[in-house]
Structures are given as C-alpha cells and as structure tokens.
Length: 595
Ligand code: ADP
Image 1 (spheres, helix red, strand yellow):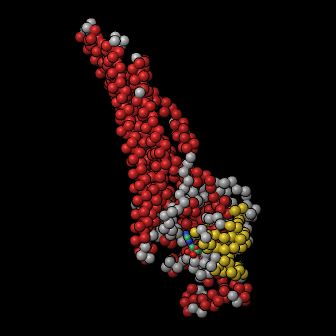
Image 2 (cartoon, protein in one colour):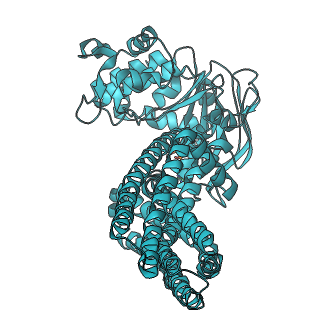
Image 3 (cartoon, protein in one colour):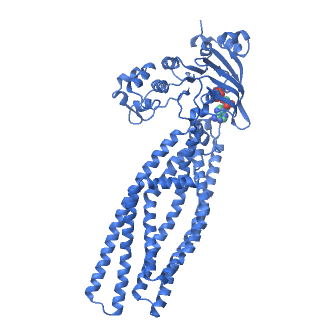
C-alpha cells in the first residue's frame, strides 16, 4: 500500500473545455432552458409594474386631479402584478430546478463512466483521494450550482437587465445615474475573478491532499501501527491541513475585498438617482412619479445585483470543480489511444527498466519472450520484482525504458484501448464482488453475453452453488443481500476472467491465505481457467514452478536464470540451490512434492 501524499494528481480541464461542457449542458435540454428563460422574463416584467403604478399614483395625487376610485384601481393593479410576479417566479424557479436536476444526473453518470474508464495505474499514481474528492465533493459543488445557483443567477440577471432597461426608457438621465455603480462592481468582480480561479483550484487541491493523507493513513492503519509511523502520519496530516487552511484563508481574503466594495456600489446609484432626479424635478424637467419609480427600481436592483455577485463566487468555485471533473474525462481520453491490431499473442520484453520511485530501479534490463501457450513460472525471493514484472506484462504500467509488447504492440497501450483481442489479465488474490446481481458481476467482463455463456463459465470454475441461489443469475449481492465467502468470490472472479477470454493469464499464486479445502477448490477452478492459455505464474511454491515449461529466476530486479526445470537443475545455479533447499524441507512433502 502506498502512503504517498505527493502523488501526481489527475489533470484539470482547460477553460475552453469547461465552456464547452457548459454549452453542452444547456444544449442537451434546450427547450426546457427556453421555457424557463421566458417565464423568468415574464416575472421580471410583472416586477416592473409595481413601482411604475406607485409612480403613477404619486403623480396623480400630486397634480391634484386624482379620483379615489382611480387610485384604488392603480393600487389593485399593483397588487395583482405582485401576485403575478410571485407565481411566475415560482414556476420559473421550478422549471430551472428541474433543468438543473436533469443536468446533474447526466453529469453524475458521466463521472461514473469516466472514472471506470481510468486505468488502475493512473488512479494508483494520482491517489484514490483525488478521484474520490472529484467524484464526491466536486460533483456536490457543481450540483448545488446547477440546482440552486444557476436558477437564482438566471432570475437575478434577467431581473436586473429589465430594471436597467426600464429606467432608461422612463428617463435616460436617471438611467445614466443607474449605471454609475457598474464600473466599480465590474472592477471589484474582475479583481476577484482573476485571483479566485487559482485560489479555488489551490483550495480544491489542498482538500484532495487532506483526503488522500487521511484515507491512506486509515487504510494503512496496521502498517502505521507496526512501524510506529503514527507521529510521521500525524505530521503529514498536519502539513496538509495547514496548506488547506492557508488556501481557505486566501479565498476568504478575496471575498472580504469583493463584498464591501460592491455593497457601496449598490447604494451609489440610488443616492444619485434621488439627487439628480430631485434636482430635475425642481427644475420641472421630470415628473415626481418618474423619480419615485426610478428610485424604487434602483432599490429593487440591489437584490438581484447582490445575488449575481454572491453567485459569481459560487460559479467560480463550481467552474474549478467542473474543470476538475472534466479532468477525469481528459485523463480517461488520454488513455484511449487507437492502437494497431497485435500480430499474434507472443509477448516480448526488451531491455525493460522500471522504477516506482525515480532513481530506484526495481527492474533492470529485463529481456524475455513468452511464446503463445507457454507456461512460465517466475520464482525468486520476496521483493525481487516478480509482481512488478507481472504488472508490466499485463500492461498495468509502462516500462521506464525499453518495451513490453504483445504481437509487436505495447501492452500498456493495448490494455488502455478498447481493443480486447490482445488481452492479458493479471489474476491477483483480491476477489471483488460488486454490488448488484450475479449477472451484473459476470457480464461486466463480457458485455452482452447470453445467460448460457455466463452459466458455462460458472460451471467451468466449479461454482455449483449457483444452482442453489434463490434467483439464479438475478440473485443480488452486497449489503443487505447475499454475501459470498472467499472461495466463492474467487470462483466468481475466475468465471469473470474466463468470460473476458484473455489469451494470457498472469497468476499470483498466493493460496497460502486460504484454508486447505478452499485452496484445493481454488486450484481446481484456476486449472480450468488456465487451460489453453499462456500462463505466467508468480510461483510462491517451487512445486508449481517445477511443472512449468520454463522458469525465470528473478533476483534484485534481473532475470538471472531462464530455462526448464531440468536444464536449470543441471546448470546447478540459483534455481538448483533454491530447489535443493526447498526439497530438503520436511514440509515440502505436505505441499505435494513431485514423486
Ligand atoms: P516480488 O513480487 O518479487 O515480491 P515486487 O515486484 O512486489 O516483488 O517488488 C519489487 C520491489 O519494488 C520491492 O523492493 C518493493 O518494495 C518495490 N515496490 C513494490 N510496489 C511498490 C510501490 N507501489 N511503490 C514503491 N515501491 C514498490
């Protein structure tokens, strides 16, 4: 398990990609967007009616020829307009919320799809915390924006535009007064936005780092305990929390400049409208009612402008979150390269060097060819590099230098592509049963496979317990449903391997953890799946190595011997020494010593 905290994070999408993503979100539900915008416009128009009617009343009363009944009518109209505005806004928001929910559902599906398309090695390198934060925290941030902020923003923006338009129509001079606050708001918003993008990205990254450190410490709890790494992990957590705190302070500072400036900018036009309007009225250039209406419009403007600004911040945060979500897509797409068809199933490693940590090669200058159908055993001391070699052959990682190819095509590119013909599968001791039905668990390896094929694969690995399942292939596994024991879980995952139909299997033969009965069944299932396939086995017991066509002895990252059991015994080298020491062990006979 890796406890690294400085892992290379997944990429972040650029601004153009985020813009395209926003346009796509709107375009995919265009009619609903149009409907919502129309409703918002109608609500904005009805909001204009109130102040205008009030202005009329003031003018009529002031000029002195107002009948009481006429004022009653005007007041009733204002009441009706307010009611209409209330209802229309409610409908518009309802439309917009539903629109947001639909967009959100699409986004969530996309995130799951893209995350699953990511090769395990990319996730391993970036750290699970990064992917988890993007798939949870970032999606939630975008979700709140789509569901609440976007409708609010649309209502506020359209309302503000109608208010400005109305003041200009009524009295252009007062319209100019209304615009006075805008440059100040624009300056403050610009100042903020330029700094906010980096600040919020840094805050997001820092949050990812905290999740990564804490989750890897929790997962590696035993290791931390055994090696007494507690203080070191606490220090690492403290460092990441400190970075996250600084990032949060930075965004707080930006907000503390933005909001007071804009607050002032809101009240400036209102004061000016009163001042200029009052003077113009005294000069007889404008009716008192118009001044009242315009001042009320200015007053009404405070709310939507405030809302737009408050939401700008949320949009900024969501923009960064969306960029990080789209980064998952970019990482997945970077991996889907179109690779040529491999010419055959032969595996060829040439001058392969590999390092997990720069400067520390764990494989050095490895050359190996495996012909189709061959059974090759990798033996050697623990930590020699057998598993790493297996991972490179399976294409889970790319060599630092040199090439690992199948049929002339790099295995890593093949593993990342959707080309299934060159498939090599590494079977480890981790047998995951996914939440869902037995059919879901199997058909993920062979989409669209008929039930007969699924059942045949289960039969092949000796999973006769399937007949006793209450709902057959539709039986559900997972929390609150059926649970499979280790042996059955392994059979299930081997059936999955059989369905995926790889030409080459890389087996990590650690059956030591299973009890003898389970191990025997597991071996039988394994034997069924490995028939007719190229098998590269990481042999932990020399017995399985003995049965292989060839044996590669790996030591300190190099293949030091390669040949059949008999040839290597005759050579009297490292393998012969291993064999003699194992053969001499009293317990060797329990493990099935060759006769
Ligand atoms: P084997 O399978 O022969 O026991 P491995 O391939 O697992 O050997 O490991 C080879 C070397 O690489 C070891 O020194 C091990 O500590 C190191 N190693 C394995 N996995 C990682 C990893 N994820 N990060 C850093 N070093 C690793």
